[in-house]
Length: 444
Image (cartoon, rainbow, N blue to C red; front, side, top):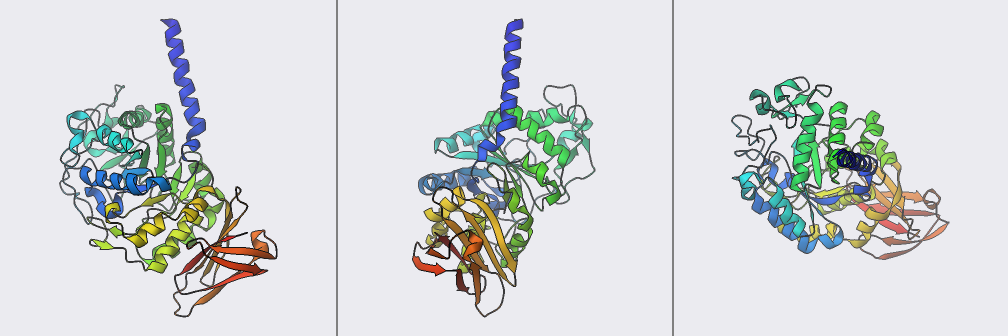
């Protein structure tokens, strides 16, 4: 018996050490997938998740899209579009104060099965399954003094009302040094691992920056031994915490929600400036979801619509997200995809840049003009994204000296979106762009 216990202890220790040293391996390239928030807000249902998973498997998986993520409040039976029902929400919890899927929205969760049947369905398509949660411990678990699994501690002994989320009042802050605090996060991560969760987005974590709870979460995920990608949300994540977040999370939001208006993108470009140095395999500054296609079917912002961004603005958004190597989480309803939006999600050359490039850096952002570059170590090519972000009605010429890209005085230029050769550039490369338009190029 003693030898068996030692063996089990050793195995558990090895698993934990492996997880702690290897969580970056779970996202060596920026994660790509679909998230229910932009289209369905807190009201997504199981049939709608399956419909989006089916579409991804049939049409997008071969291009690298793989995560299917159920966003906020899947544990509320009576939530609403256009915000949240905070008047009389009906929460679903287990006996240990852990949220469970609302069966009226996710019928396969009946009988305490949780999200395992839905995760199995997604996995059966060759995809990965993710969920969203809020930081902290449920208020209802505190009020009912529910036990924390594996301890003699109850939920009312690990919480504080300080720093409670301002915009959604479901949970209280967990006091990290209280007995039972780590065990509570362990218990929920154990549950999610048992369901087969591959990705977890945790909200109200980055602004303000809840360092102590982030550390609890990192430890809790590590000890499961399951490769669960961790996404912290929303932004703006403080740049002063860049080193900490990059050693605890696979991706973190730089801004609040990005919606389908042009100022959201220009604000993102500005906020992203200090984050280029932290674009590394396994740890990714996150531009937020992609608000293209059909959104707000039952969303938070506005009515059911096609994205309000013009086609030039949509290309600019995708150009920035891909050259910046942000995680790509599409927010529109996949079964409603139109040909133009599909073309932005399935361009092999652009996605190869997103997947394979290194040394992403901004050359300049001034006078309404932006230039970002990277390189492909496999092919030797340089990538260059040029943007006219001004609101002027007059087109603007954006120029870059080839020497800034590390290429000779003469280079061949290809439009990455169209595949069209643009011939040779000598000394400098220039392009004239209308307002809000962009260009993305391969330079050899």
